[in-house]
Picture 1 (cartoon, one colour):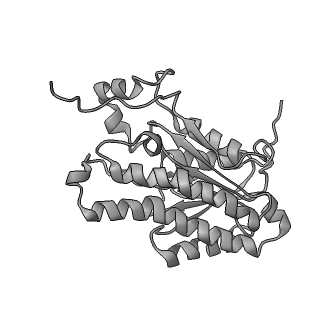
Picture 2 (cartoon, rainbow, N blue to C red):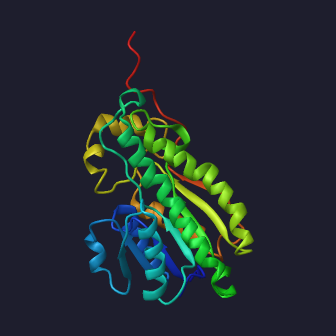
Picture 3 (tube, one colour):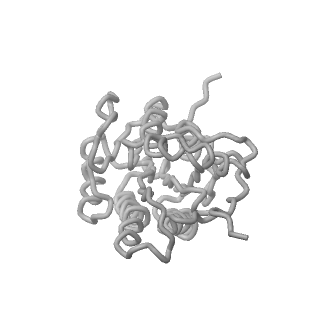
Length: 266
């Protein structure tokens, strides 16, 4: 049976597209017949090997750079962006408690993981105001959140705080505002747990760490990029999810929380 996602010919902009989840998301939307604009920060990576996409560089922390990204996407890929997938993000690898975290790290993580989405969504919505009704019909924003935004994450309070705001107050506000521009516009988030990506490979080689992560996860496995990418496509689809907005879909194998780590000394 063939399933029509209603995304053939839709212009989809995916940020952080050179990474594991982003790259797989590009592939999924290409398979669905979308016109894909793939954003990257500094390294284009495997994006250069994917045919029929437009790859653009931008610093999501910079207002001018983000505005240029939306303008170039419109110019180089056949018109205004229908669907915005906000996938980019940073997760500082070295664990630091709030007490030990310096202000520079805190500010940079929030600049990328929260201010960046704000700038992107603002530019997208402003462009949407002048778009045709046909473009507006497929209007959709999908954020990539995290289990850290729901449960917190010791040693990564900067990342957890940004994701919590993104998939919480920011997403819920936008789903109420987008309809004033595009009456059928929708905003949702996909919130994965640990996913096997190049950036996470070293961490996931620690067997004890993986066992601890999966201790409250009924499916007892770490996610794959395609698990996230396919759910993003489902939420972006005006056919499959046309009456779904303001939802945060957890893609984490049924995870129910975190174990306290390190354990308290007796």
